[in-house]
Image (cartoon, rainbow, N blue to C red; front, side, top):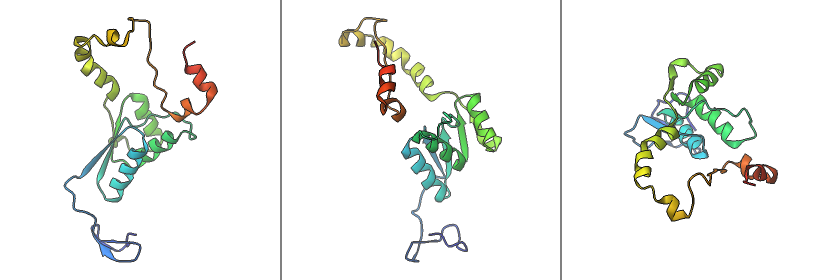
Length: 161
């Protein structure tokens, strides 16, 4: 527990013993996306007074039943640098009261990564043959979010006919 009168580097544990946080070289902690590890990393960094940069920030489903939604909101509000993928994400953050000086629109990391690796993938273009697929005769769906896999009806809606 932090002693309110203590210096920034003086800490007390629950038994009241003074100790210091571990020495660290970094002054910034990047936190990508909206997983539990992002929330944990952002919270730990904020408590150690390390600047937090949240990547792909400001995205909202506006459904607080989704665990990732809470992670997004909390991580955004404790971050020092917010890297929004698009203007609508910046607007969401601004409407939540986050200082616009902390928000930077940087683009969508997954789209950038796909285009970055597209040429490599095209050069190794034998994956369809290896998998026994024909061009245009398949599609890929990722359904890893709880709201997509926890309800049977929703799973059926996402499944091919």
